[in-house]
Amino acid sequence: MQLTVVLPTYNEAQNLPVLVETLLSLAITDCRLQILVVDDNSPDGTGVIADRLAATSGGRVHVLHRPGKLGLGPAYVAGFRWALDQGADFVVEMDADFSHNPKYLPAMVAAIAEADVVVGSRYVPGGMVDPTWPIWRRFISWWGSAYARAILGLRVHDATAGFKLFRRHVLERLPLEQTRSNGYAFQIEIAYLCERLGFRVVEIPIVFDDRTVGTSKMSPAIAIEASWRVWQIKRRY
Image (cartoon, rainbow, N blue to C red; front, side, top):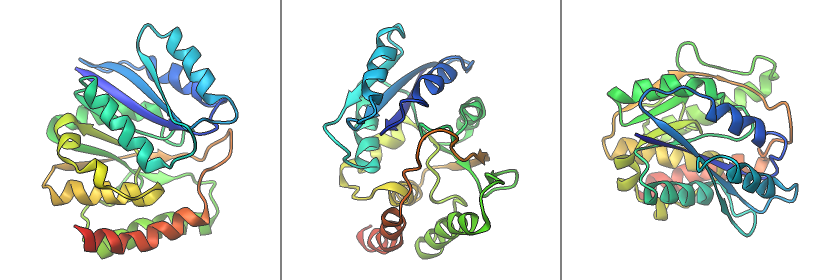
């Protein structure tokens, strides 16, 4: 089975080599893991580093270069399409800053045996956000997910989760090119579509770690977009 990990990157030059090495070292039964880096012309040279990693990976690392910072949602859509075109059986979306620890991937792959989508969840028993976060940041993280669940009637506990594993047929059925969201809102839109289409969604607990290297991409604009985009998603679908 082919398992493709899609990693959108923007200024992750320090994290990417270690993350790629960690992912390629994972032992996942019956799966061949490959990585697609979707880089948005990072000014810190992340794209160049990705090309070097690809050149020495024996065909397990690939790079999709985009001309600029075009947004997380479109990056994932481009990455998902590439993975499908290359014959992926399973596709993973995850952050490139180690906030999503690769150690959870084997458990996610095991869980997909009984599911169509597996979510690495902060808000099921055993899951949590980084305990070093201040209370206000933990509240905002929890509130964003609770807000989306309440408005859209979602069953998934972590509506803004960005660590997901999809079976191929899920991505084939999702109207990816119709999505208009970025950041947290993109994750909410995908979660909503998966439930609307009747896919089996399973959550496994993860600890969401704060990044230790580089700068967070979270911004007030992303949070504001998520708050109004939820209503647009509800009307649109």
